Image (tube, rainbow, N blue to C red):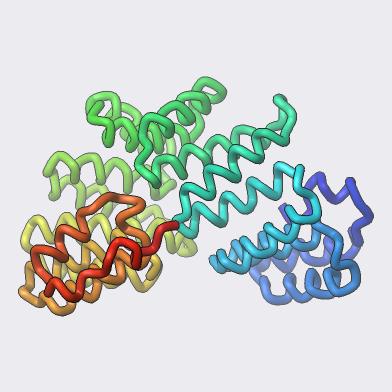
Length: 321
């Protein structure tokens, strides 16, 4: 990913690029960026260098910096589908699904029909559509992926959760159980299967599945752990295990603080604990982080029911990504 096919479209210092590769593999990201900084200082019109540095920023979960570098690469090479795809990834992880979808469409527009990158782009577009709760569009993209590869992990997993959200529960369960069966070491399969049971009120079963999934987690899978803690927190809230619910949601937010849904969950726990001032702080922050755009008006309704009217921000003051 450091030196894509674009490296051969323009003059690139391949020796320096190769030196960066082992640094990235060893997670010495700042050292790798120093190499790219020097390359950019020498040749500021080379899109490959910006793209490579953007990719390292993304590995560090520094998405604004990554998007800035990918945008610089695109300004230099506006027809490069790989740069659109990379920026769409950063946008997705920054919870900007509309912009991510736009970049995915641009990537597809600029690539050849037989380009293998096509399927990665469609996966990210489907995931972004799922994030913005456009489930019919997400379903169509995951269906395309499964027609191409019926064992594709991401397509199977996401198809299950999308079908569940569309109310096609029996179909969803088949996909979700298939993921866990065939990919027992992938955390998101457990998260999605647990979420299916959560949606059906099977909170104890959801906790059981999450606990099993936790035993398979890669120590570096902070995002997967954050999702599991957040989902298990809601299960425990519904089971009225409030101290345990608060412990889990705090662990989730420590790992991934820019999560409007986890903030909503913690607010629900605070409401149940009769600590409405703290709940209102979390609800306001959830709105600031774009909850309404992604999930609907639930947080605003919670604020209307639990918070002083003067503390509820105007819709125009919310983040609209």
